[in-house]
Length: 284
Image 1: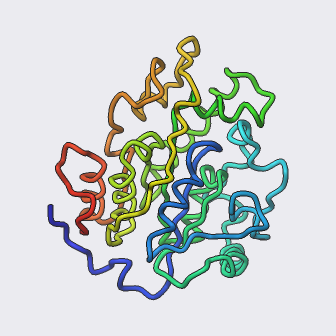
Image 2 (image 1 turned 180 degrees about the vertical axis):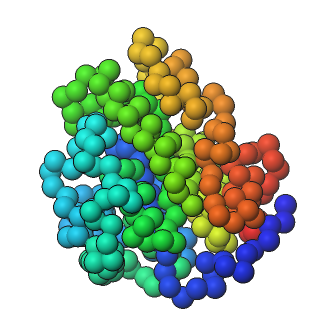
């Protein structure tokens, strides 16, 4: 399948753009950032002094305390949902974040990649602060996320499932405000890493290159379905079911990929669908 590169391609600008990875704790944000960071045109934010290289800890423009981003709880706090109406939507905040993050991108390249769980509720604000930003949301079956998060939380199973639902309800609404957003599933990344990563590269209008995935481990086997717990309605939209931790169908394309350029959007969508016959290692 041939795809036309737009004249506005990322390759034609010398100014690095920002890509934000967002997802609940234990959803695969760290894994995805590590794998995408192997691309020669992507520089992940890397700092040994903060948990999991999360950029939220490395900037002083938006307050980030122990009460922010609490696993299994932060999506319940309306003050953590930051949009274009936020008081932090100023040029001063944008410039301060760029300045604070700049030393932690190891190489000069086309894309700067930052991931923090709280990005899940900040995408609309970040689109204002970084107008050319792209967003990649990674999701995972709510039963697996809830079981994995339980070690950090005193909340019960039902409450953790409710948190997954609350977070993803916000995401599905906020996606309609974003120019460029991609939703991936952890399960698809583990089952077919090259195709999933190639879709992310295509979304960023980059050459699709093979990424070493020999050490990728699917953690789904560590958990079991919770058939006695009703599945959050949003999970059905994302292709999940209560009886299995594996997706039982594809996500709707209007949910999985949004992009201002049709060629990029269609090329990404084709890669997300194995039935399309699109080769993940053929560049656009």
